[in-house]
Length: 99
Image (cartoon, rainbow, N blue to C red; front, top):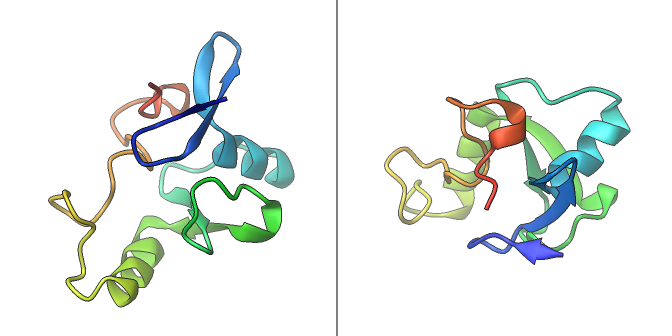
């Protein structure tokens, strides 16, 4: 298994790397994530992809939760508080910052 720069696990599926936490949640939901949804690691550990540690949230919900955990309110290294590795809104699901 491969990791991205933030430590999220990537799984090789159908000829491309995809985030394992997203694959697991989509399988549980029986549908693809909507463009405004992300999968949050409850304990903050990007390697812990147990379903009990994963939660679907909207971007707004995630930003609020992130702000409460990071006193500055932004994720370090981002302009808008959203880490670029969580979702690429300008590309299709299969192209989410695969590395």
